[in-house]
Image 1 (cartoon, rainbow, N blue to C red):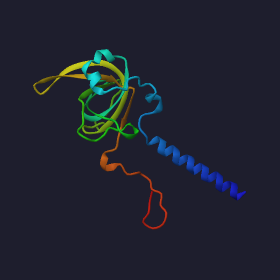
Image 2: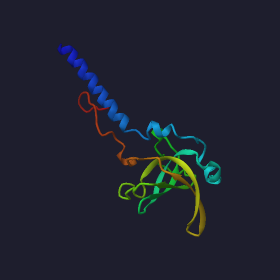
Image 3: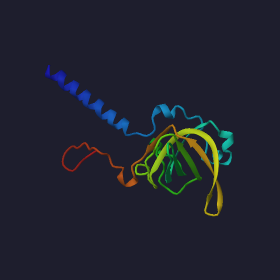
Image 4: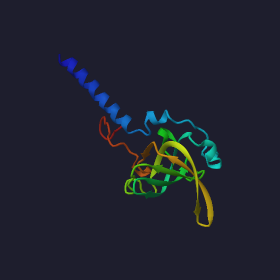
Length: 168
């Protein structure tokens, strides 16, 4: 009987660890399944009206978080996506985009410089100034957002160890 208990406890432990690791991932499978446009960001930036209604998954670095009375707007510097759909923390950007959320997104949680991945349909574009230049921002209506830990805080929050000074 104790052998069966040990086996069951091992399975339970494995299932819990699997669940914890799965939760630490990026965008949900449900939101990923809604994505209909997989082309380059630059295509949407050049002709946003052509892609109106297409659902995209984009990543980037927050430039500004602008909360309104019942909405929030994020201004984001686009960055390519890497593993787990995490934005690549580099200077290889194809431009900027706006994220419109129908919910309040606290600037303390989504501060300037935070890396995010978003999923949502393209709403169109808005023209605004960057310094003396007029810039056309593609606009995405938010379905899901994932804020990533900073690159300096990417170590796992738990460790498995065997022996002295060894961990996985």
